[in-house]
Length: 224
Image (cartoon, rainbow, N blue to C red; front, side):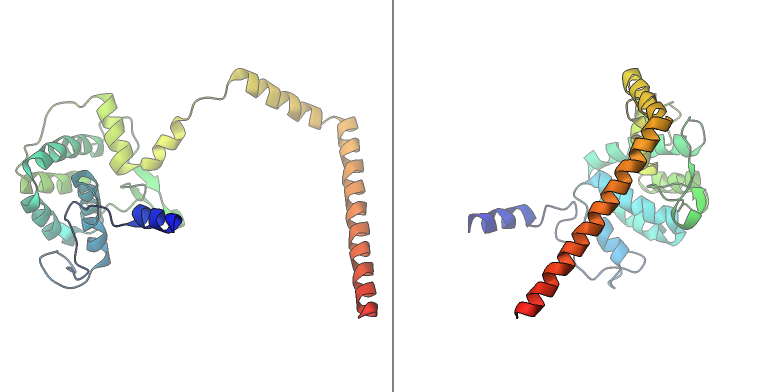
């Protein structure tokens, strides 16, 4: 019973940015009531920033989602506007090609294009679309140059989350030398000969094991 109660607490619905979202939503906009899986997923986010990321991603992929961005702008709270102003202006700077970060990449099935959330799904001009969203949210375009830390954080969050995987610490020199030493040893004739002998012994043991299992099965059949 305790485990059951714990499981219920861990799996209970979390608070959403838009509260309890109905399952009947718009094809192109939440204002029109007909089911759309993508919009439902976007409205099911826990906070404004993740909600903005989902709505913006759908607009980046499909220009017909402009009504969704207008609707999201009308629902923003004052504190949300500060988040949108920072993120969208940094994102606009990145898509303008003024940073060291790659915005072109390859996704599923080898498709290549402008990236958003790891996939080359952006259609049209990413900068123009961000300009449209800024206008809907009454946010001015910033001429300030964002810091490298801000660029990297926004790039990883919105454009290419998998890029952070390339930032792993470099392998220490002692590990590299040990690896090279082991590789060199494995190429020596004596080592390769011994390895071949061990492989032959293992194969023979496996043959004998199978023969023994077959003998036991025959004995069980006879005793039935």
